[in-house]
Length: 143
Image (cartoon, rainbow, N blue to C red; front, side, top):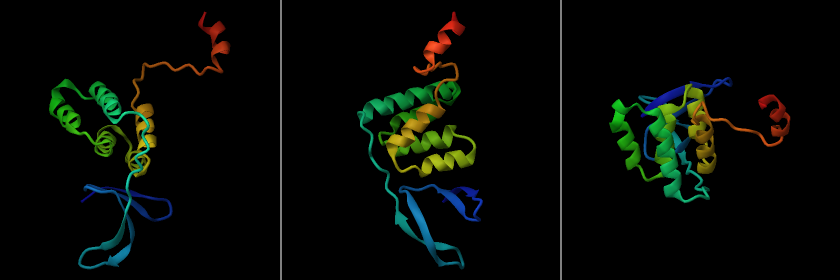
C-alpha cells in the first residue's frame, strides 16, 4: 500500500509503501489496469554495534518524551516491537516531519545510520551539547 509519494526534482517519485519488506522498484512490468513493477529486495544493513535490547530501550525512552500520556496505546505498541527495523520505521512515521525528510530517513539501509539520525533529530530541545574545540573560547562568555 502506498502511504506517501514525494515528487523529486528529476521528475521521478519516491514512494513509501506499507508492507513487510523494503524493496526498490526497478521498472514497470505493466501499466494497465494497475501499474506493476519488477522489484528488488532492499534489506537493511544490520550494522549496530551496541546491544539491540539497550538500543531499543533508549529509543523507547525517546518515544516516551514525545507521546502524550493520553496516547498510551501507541507507546505500548512501540514497546512490543523487538525488531529495530520496525521500531525505527514506526518512529520515523510518528515523529519525523516533513515527509521528504521522513522518506529519506526510511530509505537509509544502515540501521546504525538510521538510529544515529533519529537520536539527533529527536533529542530534547533543552539538551546542551558543547563542542570540545569551542569550549575554551566559550568559557569567558559563560563566566
